[in-house]
Amino acid sequence: MRAEPRVAPLRVQGQARRLPAMASGRAGEDGLPFDPAAEFPLDAGIVYLDHAAVAPLPRRAAEAACAFAREAMRRGAARYEAWLETEARLRRHAAALFCCAPEDVALVKNTSEGLSLLAFGLDWRAGEAIVHCEDDFPSNRIVWEAAAERFGLARRAVAVSREPDPEGALIAAMEAGPTRLLAVSSVHYATGLRLDLARLGAACAERGVLLCVDAIQSLGALGMDVRAWGIHWAVADGHKWLLGPEGCGLLYAAPGLRERLSLFQYGWHMTDRPGDFEAHAWHPRPDAARFEPGSPNLLGIHALEASLALLLEAGIPTVERNIIKNASYLFEELSKIEGVTLASPADPARRSGIVSFRLATSGATRALHENLREHGVICAHRAGNIRFSPHFYTHREALDRAVAQVRGWVLGA
Image (cartoon, rainbow, N blue to C red; front, side, top):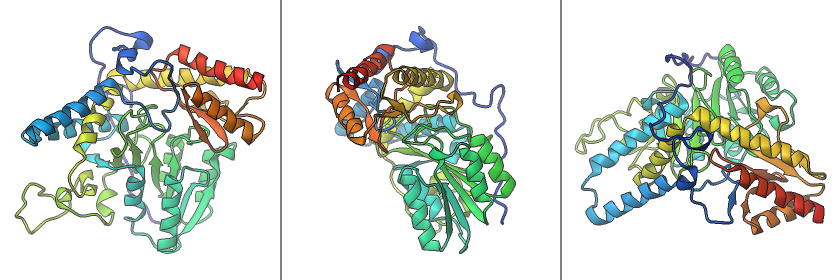
């Protein structure tokens, strides 16, 4: 088994996950430095519990996108340098969320693109194995199935949501034969199961295995430290817990790994001299922007930069605390309703922002989901469960309304 690059822990003063200090200003409810109702002016009658699917844009993100569009309409690219400053701020915000350096961050279209860059860029050898989650979202399953078929790889899949010790099951799968890469999601999309990434990172380091994390269900909601946890590759689209638009995602690529990947996307932007359009000699950029072949999505970048600035202004520890508080409240209240079965972990240490539940039959569960949406409770139906996913700004009154709608339908059915 070959040894992969080891990732040194991030050294910062104080806590390992220290983020930029919150902006000064009047503290709002739940310790927030702004009024959440002003930042999230949802229509009256809407209870939004679908951040694990597509989140509403904060006011400042919508205004940033509109301002960019108006400027592009009136002045074209007269202030292109200022647009690039916004892009640079986005990389710094993303680095704060990942706990890495800005040069370790690439901007990608979505999670699938970011995972594919690794899956088809590694120098695989036939017979090497990928360990991944059998019951994962298709983006973090199909890519590994395709890579295994392309390169003649072994593939060992673990149904983590059905394992009493999911990390132990993944580690056992790695030990079943030569393993090159472990691919997991930080949070299971259907149940909300939260994996212990630090434990998995330590196990991978001991065995010389690369650790790839689909972080779309946790980045922006839960603290993350890619360096301290030994993560080599992490990616998340912006439209869920990051509160941004679709089509603009974040990729962390560890130094020592990214330079070894074969590239299969090329263009002017990924070279070491992106502004020298007459140059014929070129090399890929040394930083993570080598995975960005062409012009950036500046409209999406302006919106996502504003959204990440909001999260960092609130402070990720505060965001995580409020999310877990909201999810735990939903878990406890739903568990009191006879006929409701919780699919999310009962162990508080395993909880995320996702709370999933079902009724006795799939037909009843689907009917309840339709009823909830008809009454303004926006949620998802995933893997036979109804999935609630509140964010840090979600009011207790909204949670109570959603629970009351479930209770009323179940008792009246």
